[in-house]
Amino acid sequence: MWPLGHAAIGYLCYSTLVRTREASPPDGLAVVVLLFGSQFPDLVDKPLAWYLGVLPTGRTLAHSLLVLGPLVVAVYLFTARRSRPECGVAFGVGALSHVFVDALPVLWGGTDPSFLLWPLVAVEPYGNGAPTITALFLESLGDPYFLSEFVFAGIALVVWRQDGYPGIGVVSRLFAGRKVR
Image (cartoon, rainbow, N blue to C red):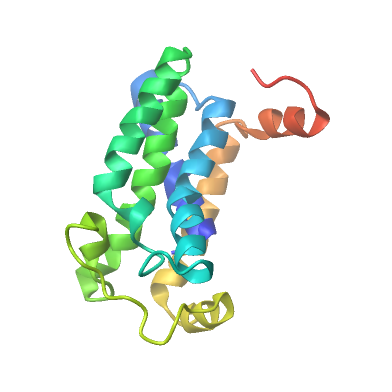
């Protein structure tokens, strides 16, 4: 899945969780953390595999539940100590939804879920070197799974609007150089 899809699925999961638990929209800072968490596995694995060649594929280290699980717990504990446990939950929802959505194509034979337990379970390294973003994009164009990302993004935008656009204020304060609360 591409970044837009990961962000949309992560937001839908997190907004549903928060509204179910608290009957209120998500906190702005938590939404920014959620968006970072929804991209985190790719921000770690893709550069390490594609450009530095230290990982066998772009879905290994940060996509592995053996690494990501303890990291999510550590982030939660860190944020809870700073009186922002919702940020730890948001990071966890974003990062975990990312890897589960990446594994989803296993249901129709589209991917190998071995990356979820890497390094205990080996993954098949790239045969002809790392793929290019352009090649991946062109390969994805006719894939219904890729096209579904736009549907999820549209739904997420509607939900985000209903939630009052949480996160916009945080980002605007960051760009204005003011303290984020």
